[in-house]
Image (cartoon, rainbow, N blue to C red; front, top):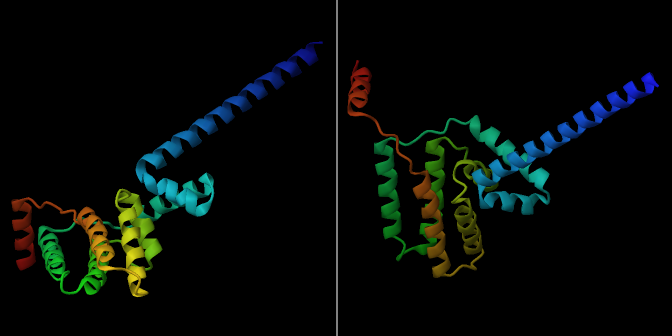
Length: 196
C-alpha cells in the first residue's frame, strides 16, 4: 500500500505542477497579447485579419518589433526638421495647381523623411510594417494614402480623394517629424570639434 500511496502522491504532484505550468503559460500568453494590443492598437486587429489567426499575427508583430529594434532610428536635428517642414509647406502650396503631382511628391517626401530617420524604404508593405511598431496610430493613414495614390495611378481618384491622400500623408509626416533637441553648449562643442 505504501508504494501505491507514494505513486499516487507523486502523480498528484506532477498533475498539479503541470496544471500550474499551463496556467502560467496561459497567463504569459494573455499578458503578451495585451502588451501587443496596447503597443499596436488597430494594427493588431489589422494583422490578425491579414494573417488569419491571432498566433500568426502576434508572431509577425513580435518579428516587427525585433526588426525595428535593430534599426538605428534617430530624431531629426532642428535644421533637418525645418527643412522638411518647409518642403511640406511648399508641397501643400502647389496642391491647387497640381493635385496629382503633389500626391506623388507627398509620398516621396514621406519616404525621404523615413530614410532620414533610419527606416528602410524598400517596398510599401515593409515600410508600413516598420512604421507600425513606433507609430501605430498613423499607419492606417499611410495605408489609406497609398490606396488612394494607387487608384490615382489607374485614373480612378478624384481631386477630393487626392486631398484626403495628402491629409493622410501629412498625419504620418507630422508623427515622423520628431526633433532632437540639442542644448546650446552641446551644439557649440560640436561646432568647435568640427572646425578643428
